[in-house]
Structures are given as C-alpha cells and as structure tokens.
Image 1 (spheres, rainbow, N blue to C red):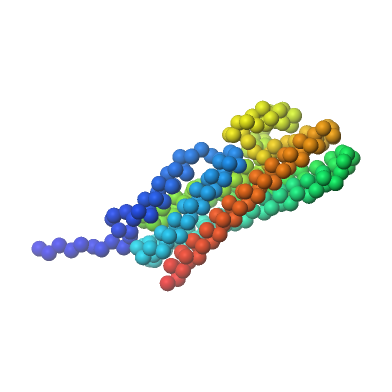
Image 2: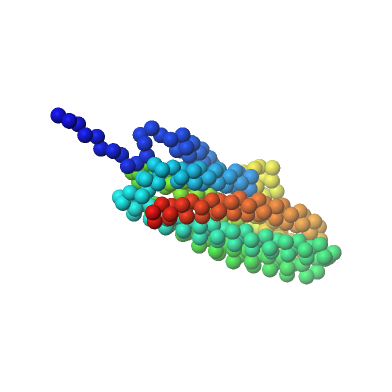
Length: 276
C-alpha cells in the first residue's frame, strides 16, 4: 500500500540558524532583570533592536513568507499587526515624554546659566515639575494600555508567529521598563512612606548602587529639594543633575528611535506578505 506524506507549509523541521539565534536572544532578554538604570535599560533597548533586526532577516526567508501567507494563519498575523500598531503608539508616547522632559531640562539649564542668584528660580523649577506631571499622566495611561494588551495576548501553534509573539512580549516588557524609568520611582509606589527629603537622602546614599540610579528622577528630586529650601548651595548640584539627566535622555531617545524604525520596517514587510 502506497504511503502518502503531507507536505508541511510551516518552517522546515530542521531549524534555521537565524531562528535559533532569535530564540537564544529572546531567552537572554527574558532571563535578564527588569531594567532599573539608564545603562541596563540601554542594554535592553539594544537587545530588542538586535531582535527586530533578526526579525527583518527572518521575514525575508521564503519559508517564513510561506508560513505567514497561509489562510489559517491570517487571523494570528492580523493580531500581530494590531499589536505592533499599539506598541508603535506606546513608542510615540515614550518619545514624546522624553522630548518634553529634555526640552524642559534644556530650558531650565539655560535659565540657570543666565541667573546668578536664586530669585525667581523657584518658579521656573515649579514649571518644570508641572510639566513632569503631564508627562507622568501620559505615561500612566500608556502603561495601563500595555498591561491590558499583555493580558490579552494569545499563543500560536505556528513556529513563525510564535517567535513573533515572543518578540512582541519582550518588546512590551522593555517599553514598560522605559516608561517606568522616565516617570520615576514615585509613580511606581504612590503609597511610599518616604517624604521628599528622605527620598533625596536615599538617592544620594545609593548613588553608587547601579540598581537604584535614575538620572531623571535624581534631577527631579533635587529640584523638589531646592523648591523647599531655595538655598543657593543647591544650584550647582541642580546644574550637574540636569546635565546628567539630559545626557541620559539623549541616549534613551536614540535607542528608542532606532527600535521604532526597525519595528516600522518589520510591520511593512508583514503587510506586504499578507497582500501578496
């Protein structure tokens, strides 16, 4: 009796080296601790960028395009496209938050360079703090959207879409860490028992501890301390903190913009595969 073998329309049974590399990078990012410093966050952004670069190469493979173009995978692929659109929206919110914080930081630095005393400076610092409230409000909304999206994620039996799901989840985690970092630690625990003074003392105490370093939050804490005291001695410290914050923001902006471009490219490729 003749035997008939069904031809698989998914990836070949022998795993492609590119797929193995992606899964290895995915596992590395999954096992890494949540980014809580600018340096660790930068490393995670670079890791996700590398993932999306590999995704672009994966999407060029004929076997990948064949798997994604199957009718039974269409719903899953469309869900991935919807997810990528939501993640891109979150990226835009993060970019806006960084840009607004950077512009306010630069403006305050300019004012500090022009003024020799503290007269009127407290009101300018308060303007910065007010702008940060608006930034944090937008970030809080974006974080809620991310959490809601993560809770709705489904699994896939197709190897290609399963890999894309994994990359989507890791990207969400890194963006969540980024947004939390930009917003600052006080937004993570509104029921904190520490007042502003004790927070500032704690931040100074752990300045050498990489796991607690947050240049944006440090600058904000110093500003709050200055508003309370209006002590001229704090001005130099404030200038240093603002410089550190601006440098940190610049690095995060570059990493986020690079990730954004790679995600756009992958999305366009998937759309082209569906429309073929």
